[in-house]
Image (tube, rainbow, N blue to C red; front, side, top):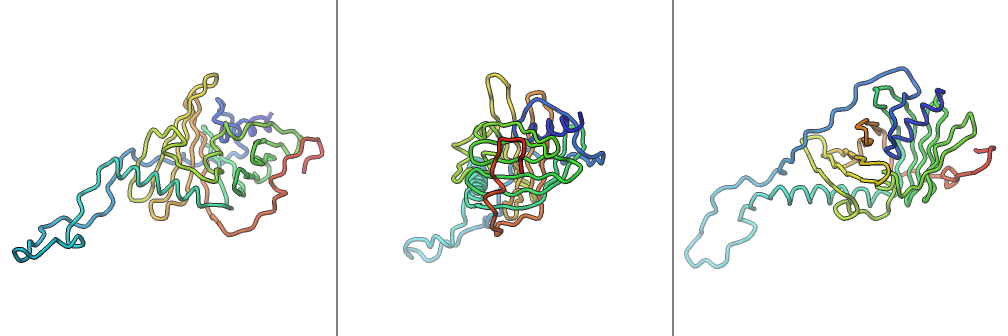
Length: 251
């Protein structure tokens, strides 16, 4: 039963499925609070009077003219473009993760991402779960029971992290953009006829736009959050770690 519950929490993380089962360990940490849903203007040159100069001195030097404050729409678009560029330019990513279930319990492990479409989440013992995507399919695998459940990659939030070229303003239903001094948060809403509405909240560092965490909210309103750390974009990855096998002697 414990393995089934652990797998259900993983399914919620990758698919937004309507489940809120417990995770592997009994340790709890508070759910991370999202940044306030507000947009702040970037630091601009302080407006001030422009010296008119001598009469008939010729055209004004544009470098001496202070820019007009950007509109909220312009600021939001700039943030979305920065996030889209970061995700598109990232070809490999390795790091640690902490997955927090709706009840605050957590599992930890390592993840390995290689574009296009490949990722592996390996959970630390005693959790026997691996999540593997090979470019088309995502499987939730139980290493102890030698069982796995497949899902189409195109129907999971992971596709936003694994796409080679991504423009979030065009390729997703972006419903909110927010920022403060430390975090930039984008909220994507996905509506599926048979399942309902899922939300994906992506959070990035405001300093370098590196990925910090994501949260999947299922149609019942339950959150599963994944925090990432110790990120490395330089490691070369073995393609075999993304291979999905379909027999009982799975490696």
